[in-house]
Image (tube, rainbow, N blue to C red; front, side, top):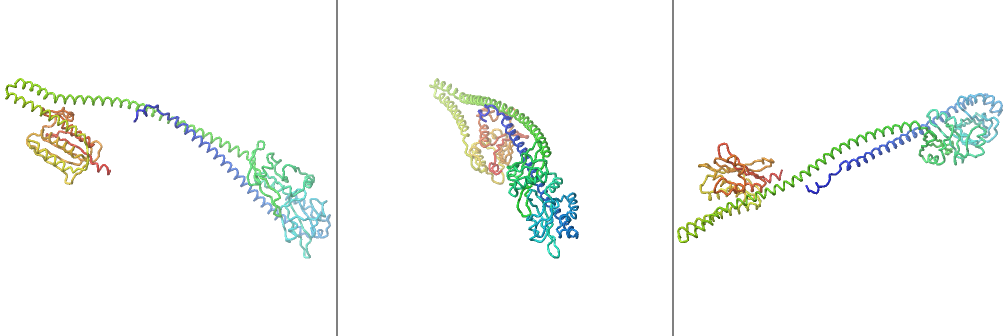
Length: 589
């Protein structure tokens, strides 16, 4: 870890996370509100569409029902001989007396508003709803259809006075030909009132101004005692409505939007109104106007707004709770992070101080090593100086001089041997590993040991049956094993054999696979107070020792990522174990 990374101030965790989290939470709540709004619009539009469909279906059903009723009434009249006789005589007064009571009953009970008697030439004989008007030619679509098809024809028709009427016309046949035509009808106001009562919607019947004249429409208002405004809309005029008045917000642009297939929502005073439109088609198949369906959704809108407000408040409270929990959690994380940061900072400072201590220890070890080297060299060199001075004084005695020179030579050889040991120790730092057959390294080392060791100690090897190949530096391993053999030979007492063994064993620290190369002697063992010092450079219990043999073994083990241990055996003797990793098995694992 770099000091610069620790030296910086710790990041503010809450500031880094709380604002993005709050933004995401706000976005979720906003998305929820928008989704709820569009769901409300969808439900509202679907409900109005279903009601509009129900209006259209009920409208058609009532037309069919009323057509059947009208057909039955006209059939009953045509079966009446008295009515047939007065119609054939064209006696209007007698016809009024015969049919007038029936018409009044139909108008009171079944909302029949029109009843005509027309001649075979389509000339009106009698209008029971308006007896004073007769003698005009009837050329409406239903009349022409009944004449041409010879059967009953019905449909919506726009009258000359601006009335929209559902009419049924049927020919009155006798054996000698056509007696005339009967026409019965009801105005649209009655139909829309029934639909209003059934579906709880208001209806406005608008007729296109192209199909009527203003003078006729105004004349119809005065004649039928109705109210209305020709100029309320640009292209349409209201001929029937279930509401007391047309909403002020219903204008030409709203009508255009409705006619395009859309829906409209607007406020009218304290009410919220939702509108849709259905086409009005007359008996000739022309779209003569429109039927505006209006639903008061004030209660629905209020309920929805309250629900959305309640849910939004609950969501805000829940979001605030989650945000609060997240804030406290982040506060805890930030405190832990600050503590970790401070701890790392302290560890860095301790690490720096530890490095200084290690440096001081290295210098101390170096000073100790230099002192030991100086001590090892100083003693023989002092002897050399003293002997040289004695030789100078004894120059006249050749025998004594030769003796002193022999001592000087021996002291020089001791210094030379020590320097050679130091050079060998320094060479251990070189390291070049390769696949090595361990049995061959052990045999070569034992052969070298037998040639150089004067006591000729017995050496016993215990090797696996299968060849063991390790990736090591064979020269360093041979050097370490040779030092262990020398150490074992110096410790062995009597005729006991030195045992060299190679066994598979896992690392005592990491559990990694590897092998143990051990050397066991039959000496007295290592004293407990000496055991902890045996791997220190220059530490030795022998007067002629250099104290570098076991440190070399330990250094070789460390270069191979291995380890060396020493232990006393229960029956006497010491076992040195050099553990080496099996790199091929470690790599395959």
